[in-house]
Image 1 (cartoon, rainbow, N blue to C red):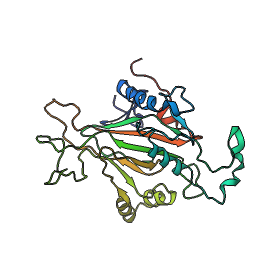
Image 2 (image 1 turned 90 degrees about the vertical axis):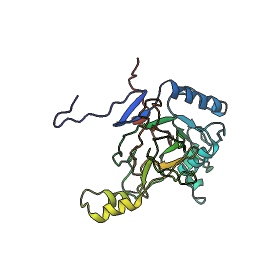
Image 3 (image 1 turned 180 degrees about the vertical axis):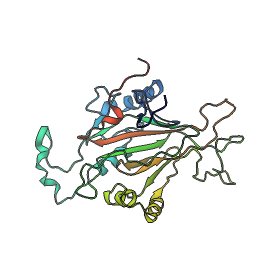
Image 4 (image 1 turned 120 degrees about the vertical axis):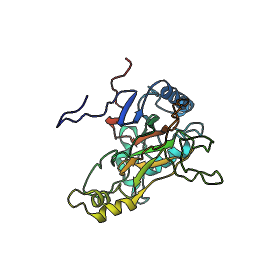
Length: 289
């Protein structure tokens, strides 16, 4: 259906998947994703205090839960980084947080507070998908100060391996003469604007009041494009301005490998216990029901 003038169609969003832009889709459910979640969650279920509906929606993680190296979602290093990010502490002040006695709390002991750990999802970019529009995944809670501590972050890890194979037309100029990956990828990745989790930086770079050449040049200079390989993990504050890069790979035009050139990126949404993101994981209509 072609939109008429003044009509805007929102991308379709279902429980199993949500459209982002042309040739880019967010896979949230389905047989393979649910199998991946069950395997990740069963490994860690013994150490969790809340295991009701473990395979649907976020899981509340308490300070004492250390995780397991057998699971990416519950990996101890991942959990430690999240706890440190969500709980900046001044040793001269934390004992004054007397309200932590409420609701059966342990009092102002300075321990990390609980957080919500989302389910594993995947954004899939197919050959021919273009650059995303520049955006942030969540707004700032308040606008009276430049930047409060992080309350919502995303965790990315590649769901693919870039291989140097003969007769593989999916990749172009990605390996040097020794067969070492250069970090470049025609399948793209994600670009981030350094420092844009701060209101002042984004206001300077993206203000509608006076878009000038200097601001555009500064935006380009602040934009970084991390090169991620299998096993790498990237954390970013959801207030950070970013966008998915184009997938200019050729795929497999012979039709022998329909997955050639597709770029799956596994992700976790992680937030403070009191924050709820209705956009990503609320129940939605199923495609196949």
